[in-house]
Length: 321
Image (cartoon, rainbow, N blue to C red; front, side):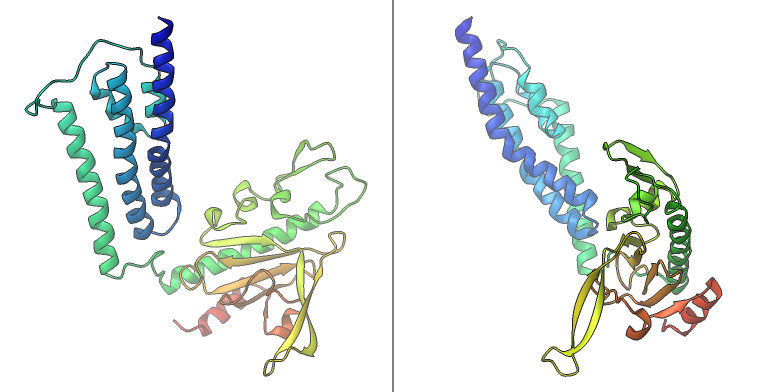
């Protein structure tokens, strides 16, 4: 009995070792296909990784089943990803032996699963290939009305953030004795006190508080709190017409700034927006607006102040289609 248990532990160790690469490829493939935001590219590469990882995992499971004398039908657990090896690893040794000869037939369940998996992979690869050849774009081009709507929503959300910052500064939320602006957008939804406990503030929605990265963009726009602003020194940097630039840190007691950028420039919005403690919202073409490309003096760098939705509409009407 002790020998059997030692043998099973050894087999389980081999199962975990050899299933690891297959499961890793499965998870990576699913991640690329579902969350990379790359359309047919992520789907195509993800399907290929799953197509490689699943047989690897299935081979390791079948070898384990053979060592513990269990039916090889359990190898279908490889389709469950990381759950499959965990389930099979808990099986107790049995007395089943594989059929001899090459004429042994698989069950109807075996055939159905094999056909379903093959058709699924074939469909994903065919769709990805057809879209690639046809010049499919991701994200798809939005029509001008959708672009204007996304830009208007970004402008209104910056107005909301500005009002929330004013209210935030009226209270010492973290209890450190200082009333400051929220250094990060998420703090307008939830902050922490000096002991690390969360403090619910809810001056903006949770969705807006998390819209700092592309994965949580709202209507195609991300909203990033700035801690630095670019300052032009006026000194030549060695390039024709170029000037050196420096950056300065914002003082949260007196300053805040949030830049709204389209997550996919020229796809879901052509304008970037800047709001800060001055109460003004500025706009400029989104191309080239990076983290350190937000000027301390927007007017001097060609940014245009936007006073209302109507004034934004006038700028949009002048934009090329």
